[in-house]
Image 1 (tube, chains in turn brown, green):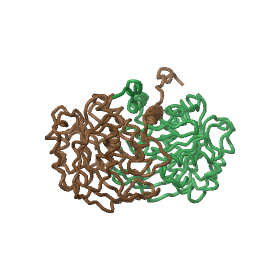
Image 2 (tube, chains in turn yellow, blue; image 1 turned 180 degrees about the horizontal axis):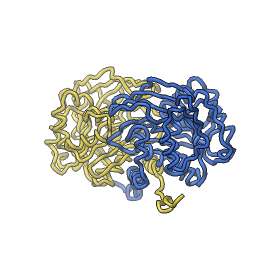
Image 3 (cartoon, one colour; image 1 turned 135 degrees about the horizontal axis):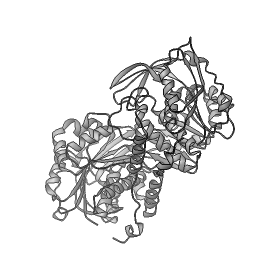
Image 4 (cartoon, chains in turn yellow, brown; image 1 turned 120 degrees about the horizontal axis):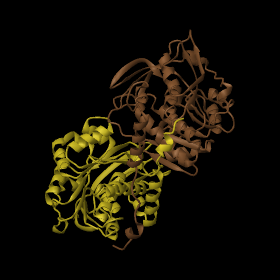
Length: 313
Length: 313
């Protein structure tokens, strides 16, 4: 097992979906990703919270073995706040409010103990901040990064520099289309690989995920769920599951990357079954195994005996 | 190998996509499905064409061993005509014109030689016409049906009767959401199974296909293509590939159904690489095998050694 760093937002969210509404509950990319990764590997967390961030969320992280030396608390500040509402199908959401608060000045300094970590997930943050973290990591670190439409529009150069320095870029389908300037996902993946990363993972929400490199193409559906409650955090839980598995196996060969996408898929499926961290909290080792094995079975189909197949009709 | 019947429209299409434009080329659900099925099993075709329908399209079907005894030609009539334009991402299309012409009075009488067929694909037609065909087929026939949003809106009772009598319902994701009244695909599939069919297949376009029954859940991505030229006929080619494989194997157990979905996926991928039948025409046995085997490899990920996985950290 190797060490993994997770860097990103730690937030309070107010979310409304067709299945309910919650007010100022714990969220944020680094929180979702760390809780997810913590199912597999104790993560080293980097983030900043205000005085209003509940201690029991940090306790949940600690209970998963997380190292919080990189989490700064600003007692007289307020935590990053996001508020959004999802549509009927939960495939689109509208942001109602974003208050950066203590996150506005987030300028992470990695504790010395983090700097030789072998794996890192840079969640969606301003590319300049991602670059500052990359400067503090050793060359041998396998880095995954996420981003968002805003940075693709407004910080393309800095984002390009990030992409040239990371190992794996994680994008959802609309982001990769926007970044690559083509609606065709296969072609878009090729263009993003040309920007530098060795691997691209396309998150397609309920339609699954695809991993592309020069040598490999892997694609699986999402885990089917009759009861999706809140999609918030699904992508970050997916990323946390990926980096957690890679660090746990301490290997980023194609075999482990494929498994990492499958773990990410399974862990994200648990995330969306509840608001805030409820879904992830409810995922125990037994259910994780059950879903992983079920997902494998779900995509399996048999080879043809082509000799027999080819017999003259 | 068993016999399979394909019933549906035989058309002339005018299509515009971001990659070009064609005028009055051969199309129609029964044509796409029959050419696709013909890669695997000689199909028995049921349809009607006008004097304007090109003989060489029928020759292509004959070259695949198709039986055209059920194809009526109305020399002084015009063939069904459809015209449409696709958006930039080719995920949506707008219908510009639909002229039923000779298809308006389509009231298929199956040749006696067809009636004991063991497999049948009822392409998208008015549900009353689908019912009339069902009345002419033996009880032992495995029937797949397709439909469309129009019939879900206007002919729900007749469509319900069709669904109660077929073995497998084929729907795209927006159709099944509309039919089931829920955006959640897993739940929508359950509701359609409750209407009668033993199997539901959800076509998700570039996102793949999902097969659901009470006992099985199978889901695979689409075959990745950097050059999609025209999506017209993809769903019907998919269905033709499915029914062709089932008839060829003469088995509709879960194993063959899963393989059928994979064959449908591969054959649909060839369809969209050209306008009209160009893509399907270009698919030879070698490429079919290559893509089938590649698709299997594309979704494969390894089991975990859970004992080792579970060791205390």
